[in-house]
Image (cartoon, rainbow, N blue to C red; front, side, top):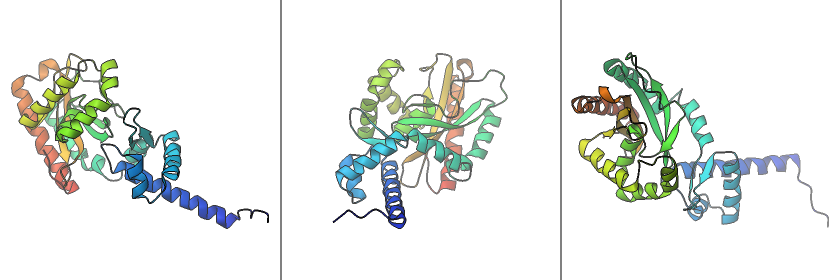
Length: 266
Protein backbone atom coordinates (compact mmCIF):
# COMPACT_ATOMS: atom_id res chain seq x y z
CA UNK A 1 0.00 0.00 0.00
CA UNK A 2 1.32 3.43 -0.94
CA UNK A 3 2.18 5.83 1.87
CA UNK A 4 -0.46 8.42 2.56
CA UNK A 5 0.57 11.92 1.63
CA UNK A 6 0.22 14.51 4.39
CA UNK A 7 -2.87 16.64 3.99
CA UNK A 8 -2.78 20.42 4.56
CA UNK A 9 -4.70 19.93 7.81
CA UNK A 10 -2.29 17.24 8.99
CA UNK A 11 0.70 19.41 8.03
CA UNK A 12 -0.73 22.27 10.05
CA UNK A 13 -1.26 20.04 13.07
CA UNK A 14 2.30 18.71 12.86
CA UNK A 15 3.65 22.24 12.50
CA UNK A 16 1.70 23.41 15.51
CA UNK A 17 2.93 20.45 17.56
CA UNK A 18 6.54 21.21 16.61
CA UNK A 19 6.11 24.84 17.64
CA UNK A 20 4.57 23.84 20.95
CA UNK A 21 7.44 21.47 21.64
CA UNK A 22 10.02 24.12 20.73
CA UNK A 23 8.39 26.73 22.97
CA UNK A 24 8.16 24.20 25.78
CA UNK A 25 11.85 23.39 25.54
CA UNK A 26 12.73 27.08 25.31
CA UNK A 27 10.81 27.78 28.52
CA UNK A 28 12.48 24.82 30.20
CA UNK A 29 15.94 26.10 29.25
CA UNK A 30 15.06 29.62 30.40
CA UNK A 31 13.88 28.36 33.79
CA UNK A 32 17.27 26.76 34.48
CA UNK A 33 19.60 29.75 34.77
CA UNK A 34 22.62 27.65 35.77
CA UNK A 35 22.28 25.35 32.75
CA UNK A 36 20.15 22.37 31.74
CA UNK A 37 21.03 18.81 30.74
CA UNK A 38 19.51 17.26 27.63
CA UNK A 39 18.01 14.38 29.61
CA UNK A 40 16.33 16.74 32.08
CA UNK A 41 14.94 18.93 29.31
CA UNK A 42 13.57 15.94 27.41
CA UNK A 43 11.96 14.52 30.54
CA UNK A 44 10.40 17.86 31.48
CA UNK A 45 8.59 17.98 28.12
CA UNK A 46 7.89 14.23 27.88
CA UNK A 47 10.01 13.92 24.74
CA UNK A 48 12.50 11.28 23.74
CA UNK A 49 16.15 12.31 23.70
CA UNK A 50 16.44 12.33 19.90
CA UNK A 51 13.41 14.58 19.42
CA UNK A 52 14.50 17.00 22.13
CA UNK A 53 18.01 17.14 20.66
CA UNK A 54 16.67 17.85 17.16
CA UNK A 55 14.50 20.72 18.40
CA UNK A 56 17.32 22.15 20.52
CA UNK A 57 19.65 22.11 17.51
CA UNK A 58 17.09 24.15 15.57
CA UNK A 59 16.83 26.62 18.47
CA UNK A 60 20.64 26.84 18.58
CA UNK A 61 20.80 27.60 14.85
CA UNK A 62 18.33 30.44 15.35
CA UNK A 63 20.21 31.81 18.36
CA UNK A 64 17.51 31.15 20.94
CA UNK A 65 19.54 28.52 22.81
CA UNK A 66 23.27 28.05 23.40
CA UNK A 67 25.17 24.92 24.41
CA UNK A 68 28.29 25.12 26.54
CA UNK A 69 31.15 23.33 24.82
CA UNK A 70 32.54 21.74 27.97
CA UNK A 71 29.57 20.98 30.21
CA UNK A 72 27.25 20.31 27.23
CA UNK A 73 24.51 22.06 29.16
CA UNK A 74 21.99 24.33 27.47
CA UNK A 75 21.41 28.01 28.19
CA UNK A 76 19.10 30.69 26.90
CA UNK A 77 20.57 32.36 23.79
CA UNK A 78 21.05 35.95 22.62
CA UNK A 79 18.03 36.03 20.29
CA UNK A 80 15.74 35.21 23.21
CA UNK A 81 17.40 38.03 25.12
CA UNK A 82 16.77 40.50 22.28
CA UNK A 83 13.09 39.60 22.09
CA UNK A 84 12.81 39.70 25.86
CA UNK A 85 14.39 43.13 25.92
CA UNK A 86 11.90 44.42 23.36
CA UNK A 87 9.06 42.92 25.40
CA UNK A 88 10.52 44.61 28.46
CA UNK A 89 9.57 47.96 26.96
CA UNK A 90 5.99 47.01 27.79
CA UNK A 91 6.47 45.18 31.06
CA UNK A 92 9.02 43.54 33.33
CA UNK A 93 12.10 44.73 35.13
CA UNK A 94 13.10 47.15 32.37
CA UNK A 95 9.98 49.26 32.72
CA UNK A 96 9.78 48.83 36.49
CA UNK A 97 13.37 50.07 36.89
CA UNK A 98 13.02 53.21 34.78
CA UNK A 99 12.20 55.62 37.61
CA UNK A 100 14.91 54.18 39.85
CA UNK A 101 17.51 54.59 37.10
CA UNK A 102 16.52 58.21 36.57
CA UNK A 103 16.63 58.94 40.31
CA UNK A 104 20.06 57.38 40.62
CA UNK A 105 21.40 59.33 37.64
CA UNK A 106 19.99 62.59 39.02
CA UNK A 107 21.41 62.02 42.50
CA UNK A 108 24.82 60.69 41.48
CA UNK A 109 25.26 62.69 38.25
CA UNK A 110 27.00 59.60 36.87
CA UNK A 111 26.02 56.91 34.37
CA UNK A 112 23.58 54.29 35.66
CA UNK A 113 22.82 50.84 34.26
CA UNK A 114 20.28 48.04 34.47
CA UNK A 115 21.74 44.60 33.77
CA UNK A 116 20.11 41.17 33.69
CA UNK A 117 21.57 37.66 33.93
CA UNK A 118 21.65 35.63 30.70
CA UNK A 119 22.93 32.15 31.44
CA UNK A 120 26.54 32.48 32.60
CA UNK A 121 26.67 36.04 31.26
CA UNK A 122 25.18 39.39 32.19
CA UNK A 123 23.67 41.81 29.67
CA UNK A 124 23.18 45.56 29.91
CA UNK A 125 19.60 46.37 28.91
CA UNK A 126 19.32 50.02 29.91
CA UNK A 127 21.65 52.98 30.40
CA UNK A 128 20.85 56.44 31.79
CA UNK A 129 23.50 59.17 31.77
CA UNK A 130 23.98 61.73 34.51
CA UNK A 131 25.09 65.32 34.13
CA UNK A 132 28.77 64.91 35.04
CA UNK A 133 30.72 65.81 31.86
CA UNK A 134 33.19 62.91 32.01
CA UNK A 135 31.18 59.74 31.44
CA UNK A 136 31.89 56.05 31.32
CA UNK A 137 31.33 54.61 27.84
CA UNK A 138 32.60 51.14 28.68
CA UNK A 139 29.16 49.53 28.96
CA UNK A 140 26.47 50.09 26.33
CA UNK A 141 22.96 48.69 25.96
CA UNK A 142 23.18 45.19 24.52
CA UNK A 143 26.72 44.53 25.75
CA UNK A 144 27.31 41.18 27.45
CA UNK A 145 30.10 40.11 29.77
CA UNK A 146 30.68 36.96 31.84
CA UNK A 147 29.06 37.02 35.28
CA UNK A 148 31.41 38.74 37.71
CA UNK A 149 32.81 41.21 35.17
CA UNK A 150 31.62 44.68 36.16
CA UNK A 151 29.81 45.87 39.27
CA UNK A 152 26.25 44.91 38.33
CA UNK A 153 27.34 41.54 37.01
CA UNK A 154 29.37 40.88 40.16
CA UNK A 155 26.40 41.80 42.35
CA UNK A 156 24.33 39.16 40.56
CA UNK A 157 27.05 36.51 40.83
CA UNK A 158 27.37 37.12 44.57
CA UNK A 159 23.71 36.20 45.15
CA UNK A 160 24.28 32.72 43.77
CA UNK A 161 25.21 29.69 45.85
CA UNK A 162 28.87 28.76 46.23
CA UNK A 163 28.28 25.78 43.97
CA UNK A 164 26.70 27.94 41.26
CA UNK A 165 29.55 30.45 41.52
CA UNK A 166 32.08 27.66 40.97
CA UNK A 167 30.14 26.36 37.96
CA UNK A 168 30.11 29.85 36.51
CA UNK A 169 33.84 30.31 37.06
CA UNK A 170 34.54 26.96 35.42
CA UNK A 171 32.20 27.61 32.49
CA UNK A 172 33.72 31.02 31.74
CA UNK A 173 37.35 30.06 32.40
CA UNK A 174 38.42 30.13 28.75
CA UNK A 175 36.95 33.54 27.95
CA UNK A 176 38.28 34.98 31.21
CA UNK A 177 41.79 33.80 30.42
CA UNK A 178 41.62 35.13 26.88
CA UNK A 179 39.77 38.44 27.32
CA UNK A 180 39.36 39.35 31.00
CA UNK A 181 42.81 38.55 32.34
CA UNK A 182 42.32 40.40 35.65
CA UNK A 183 39.44 38.12 36.58
CA UNK A 184 41.19 34.96 37.71
CA UNK A 185 39.21 32.35 39.64
CA UNK A 186 40.76 33.46 42.93
CA UNK A 187 40.02 37.13 42.20
CA UNK A 188 36.38 36.32 41.43
CA UNK A 189 36.00 34.32 44.63
CA UNK A 190 37.47 37.19 46.65
CA UNK A 191 35.18 39.70 44.93
CA UNK A 192 32.15 37.53 45.67
CA UNK A 193 33.12 37.33 49.36
CA UNK A 194 33.61 41.10 49.57
CA UNK A 195 30.29 41.76 47.83
CA UNK A 196 28.41 39.51 50.22
CA UNK A 197 30.04 41.20 53.21
CA UNK A 198 29.39 44.76 52.02
CA UNK A 199 25.97 44.14 50.54
CA UNK A 200 26.95 45.68 47.21
CA UNK A 201 29.62 45.14 44.57
CA UNK A 202 32.61 47.32 43.68
CA UNK A 203 34.60 47.12 40.46
CA UNK A 204 37.94 48.83 41.01
CA UNK A 205 38.96 49.27 37.40
CA UNK A 206 39.46 45.59 36.61
CA UNK A 207 38.04 45.96 33.10
CA UNK A 208 39.50 49.40 32.29
CA UNK A 209 41.77 50.91 34.93
CA UNK A 210 40.11 54.33 35.18
CA UNK A 211 36.51 53.07 34.96
CA UNK A 212 35.14 52.07 38.36
CA UNK A 213 31.66 50.94 39.33
CA UNK A 214 29.28 50.12 42.15
CA UNK A 215 26.38 47.67 41.83
CA UNK A 216 23.58 45.98 43.77
CA UNK A 217 21.32 43.09 42.85
CA UNK A 218 17.55 42.98 42.49
CA UNK A 219 16.19 39.65 43.71
CA UNK A 220 12.75 38.15 43.27
CA UNK A 221 10.50 36.57 45.89
CA UNK A 222 12.45 33.29 45.68
CA UNK A 223 15.75 35.06 46.35
CA UNK A 224 17.04 34.68 42.79
CA UNK A 225 18.73 37.69 41.18
CA UNK A 226 16.68 39.00 38.25
CA UNK A 227 18.85 42.04 37.58
CA UNK A 228 21.20 44.62 38.99
CA UNK A 229 21.47 48.39 39.16
CA UNK A 230 24.94 49.89 38.91
CA UNK A 231 26.74 53.21 38.67
CA UNK A 232 29.97 53.77 36.72
CA UNK A 233 32.34 56.72 36.89
CA UNK A 234 35.98 57.64 36.60
CA UNK A 235 38.21 56.47 39.44
CA UNK A 236 38.55 59.93 41.02
CA UNK A 237 34.79 60.13 41.60
CA UNK A 238 34.58 56.86 43.51
CA UNK A 239 36.59 57.35 46.67
CA UNK A 240 35.86 54.93 49.51
CA UNK A 241 33.49 57.28 51.36
CA UNK A 242 31.43 57.86 48.21
CA UNK A 243 31.43 54.15 47.35
CA UNK A 244 29.57 53.46 50.58
CA UNK A 245 27.08 56.26 49.92
CA UNK A 246 26.38 55.09 46.36
CA UNK A 247 26.16 51.48 47.49
CA UNK A 248 23.41 52.33 49.96
CA UNK A 249 21.60 54.39 47.32
CA UNK A 250 21.69 51.45 44.94
CA UNK A 251 20.45 49.01 47.56
CA UNK A 252 17.53 51.31 48.36
CA UNK A 253 16.51 51.56 44.71
CA UNK A 254 16.94 47.81 44.22
CA UNK A 255 14.51 47.33 47.09
CA UNK A 256 12.02 49.62 45.34
CA UNK A 257 12.29 47.64 42.10
CA UNK A 258 12.04 44.32 43.95
CA UNK A 259 8.87 45.40 45.75
CA UNK A 260 7.28 46.38 42.45
CA UNK A 261 8.23 42.98 41.06
CA UNK A 262 6.83 41.30 44.16
CA UNK A 263 10.15 40.21 45.68
CA UNK A 264 12.92 41.29 48.04
CA UNK A 265 16.38 42.71 47.48
CA UNK A 266 19.98 42.37 48.62
